[in-house]
Length: 602
Image (cartoon, rainbow, N blue to C red; front, side, top):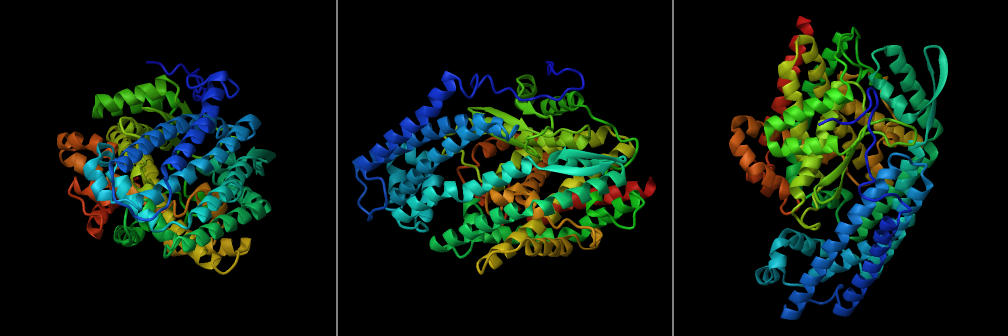
């Protein structure tokens, strides 16, 4: 099956099969239907008394009310997902699209009402005998995990009036700051001197120069990037101060000991699991610093600067075109299973992927569920194997969505900790296949790219996690200045990277770069969980492929229906002990040893 992409061109995703356009009757009908359905659901909640109340005996009428509410909520969430994903498809590829931005703002206004109804439902569930409800209702049994979690969450709710006000203020508060960061940073133009010529480039293109083989280009881009962040830091710092201040306040009012405790609960893990993982991660810093020092030797440098982290190794590294990467992913996914292969064929054949970097497009990569088993993948493709591995990673998310498709929207509410499960597995599947076919020089390149990822997810994520903890602590007293954000960022980078990087050539503005800081609290550690959990599962796959395949799709289908510890136990994994995490990190240590050996021999 051809990707139907002209030679040398990078694809844009096809949204026209969802709706013909943002001004089309079909889209406008579904968009306005959300408001109508919300009106109807609000009337239903009011009529049935779905809100915080005193505990009462569970009767047949209450069971029926619960079932009607859950079925209606699932239908509304499904409709909102498709409409929201469609708008996101425009906003993230061109932040200057005023119509898309307007529709996104309108949808966010309606999402406030949906949040308020969800809070009322949670408070109402808190008044029920949940175990009796599960015993009496098939719908409740199908949503048992959500119910038990809601019962705990209900104890952390403010009064109904306060929760309603918090939801309304979010549109002009945290959500507005998130939009400001995303829109503002995606439109930044950076002035940089390249090859003796002054140029003005989008921030995403300047950051992509970190992968350039010429050190003078990487350094010039890095210095220009830092200058741009410095010039534009005032509104970004205001956004971060406001978001973290609001999170501190709401966490306190909801009686969480800290924002971290709330985040751990939201991610379906406990502090014992988090502590075990972070302990094992810290033990591995020395191994990943060995990799960084080995890379410096391979580049002929005394130490890596920040702008050398993503420097390519070897002049003869293979360039991967998008079509070559697509064919390789299709082949390796199909070798694993027909189902995974079919997913890859659909994604490339039906134009699910937007790969071209361009002005106004969001940096990075992500996958979003659109409807049923259909997804869309955003990437900023470069002709490297790392970009191919990123495509495999994002398509892993799409495969996760395929397995979640039979579930209701409330059943498929997967936390970030488990959202990386399939993506890490698929990335490793493709990367290990590439290593088997590669000569020594190409092995160095692939291993180095793999270790780049591991270093980012373990060492850099740790620095960001520690940074965020300290920001929350200091933000309880007052706002932080730009200089204070920078100092905290540098401090945590030095603590984690140690002698793996030049301590005088770090990135003080990573707090401005990473959009996740502005979207959710403690976004960072779930990526580490995902990497190490995925590696642990991949090891199980290598031990017994057929046994693994027999249970893997069901695990992916259940990531919103059980906590991480329960799901892991199906594969004999105890997430609350460091031993599992150490075993996953041993996979990375072996990669470091193999890389060091190849660098010395080369």
